[in-house]
Image (cartoon, rainbow, N blue to C red; front, side, top):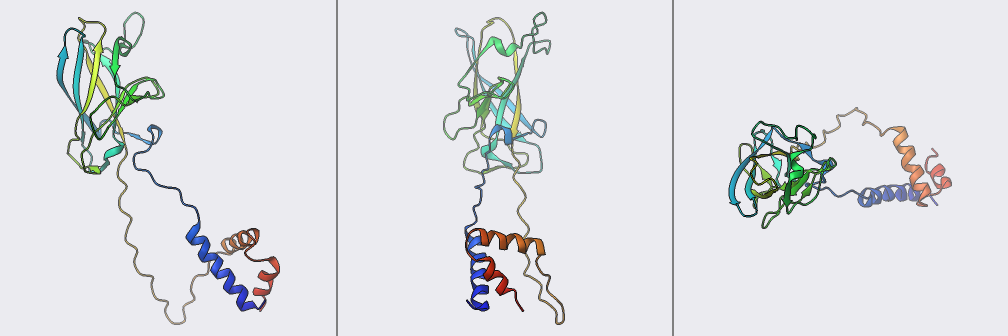
Length: 234
């Protein structure tokens, strides 16, 4: 096999590798482990919308307000029912240290966080609790409507959170954390490659990169070691 034919086969193999090399798909929403704690940068707006005195059930609309200058990926937003406090601002029983969360039924949650807190994912249709964080606190996905991002200083659509109070006469306040992802900035536009000035020598690829590519081609049977040696002969 002539040197020119071998070089042509190597070039063709490099092109094929570039076209068909496996690529991992990207996901915007991500799992809870991939989400960032946005509490403080994004706040919750909690509105009591209903109360059933017979069952001691309270119904809330909870939306997220973006206080950052960044876009938040809408379908990544999650609210976590972090704690429930009494009138004194305490979230645990004084004698036993038990969390007040255990005294409530959290309706419709979607799961739990690692520390057992219920969480709710934001659905496209009717809202319900989506789960719990690992520490058992309920979280809710925030409905965002048709837009893909939550812009700065704007509010999401509300998620519906339902809490059933087992201690009928106690007064409480739910507190939420916000999890989600920021929209990465757009990649800078690539400028056309600069033309090589007369007399200038183009930068050659690193020797290690070439060696690794050749070893891969030999391993896959695209070329043999003998063909590669002949192609490199002066």
